[in-house]
Length: 469
Image (tube, rainbow, N blue to C red):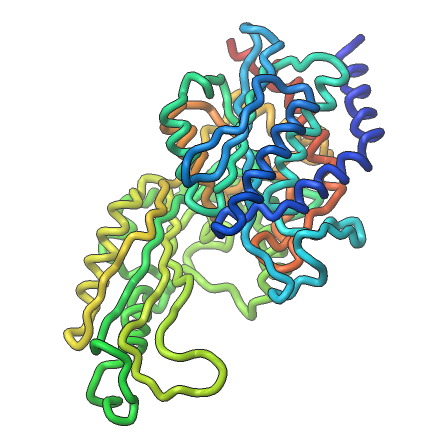
């Protein structure tokens, strides 16, 4: 049997299994594996067990649910039947999800999947349970119709949306178990349904909380308004000084380590700009773009660092009215970082700047939120990147765009730092599918294309690796 015949058999297996594959995805989506809420710990554990059983049915071996006190489970499985001469790939996905409630604006129960107009609606549909099932359904099809040409290891995480502490410690402590030649992180999204894209850079992140304290307790605004500096007002005054009129971050030293894009890379990124801009308008529905005027929308998103105010609290904001002068006001702040910016250093620079901006009428404290990872820029031209580019082109019928992504996937930095693996990022969702928001969904035709992409990837990576060695 030729390679072409084998691929066709696998593709036919996928076509014959389509309804079952969709139902299995729905089964996983029905489990509210919300890692950010302690009351759903049992649901996260149940999802881990469900995935482990699916891995066994798909033909994977050495499957185990890895538990650690106080943290969400990891799920591991492998198939090493291709032999020691074949490359080994470590695949990563996450199965936990963000909270979701009908009252948020969902048209249907977020944990009762519904198909409408070719779209599957449920929390986790695009971020990121469809990626888990794309990987498992692809390897099932490959093993059911002949052995894989590569060895595979799978590591599925249950707390990507929360701390990520379990997997980060596991990678540090178990490098031999995760030993591989390459790694693939299957997560994220693309800016257009019909145009595949391959991300080669992710921003890092550091998060913190700013507390501004004024009086010892809430005060009557009639008695003390005008003679006590309102902490909510002081907080806003501080925050307003963190950017200048060109949307540039004012923190001294913030940009010192930032590497400017070269003209060649700017030209490459500009090829994706029409898709980036169209997706931006469709998803945000904002009146006008904002940001540094010297950079286009794609560059602002993927190649420039940012400082974002993620939330503000202070005083009374419930129904009715309470004329109170609050004792304290709080802001949640995060910075998206680019290559060479260190999270700890950025946090120190921001703390120093806020201390200088704080008036003597109040006190302020900037606390780390315990979440920081550096940016990642993946090497182009490696066997795994070339295999991914070819696989997307064969499944979608179009050459992928190369993108810098604005988001952060902490495990990517960990894999590079601890395991030293050449990596590729392989997303299969559309950015407009509402990840983290109400009515999150995934296009079922993109799920099918994702499975076919992986079938091409197995064969292409085997060829690329053989050529490289």
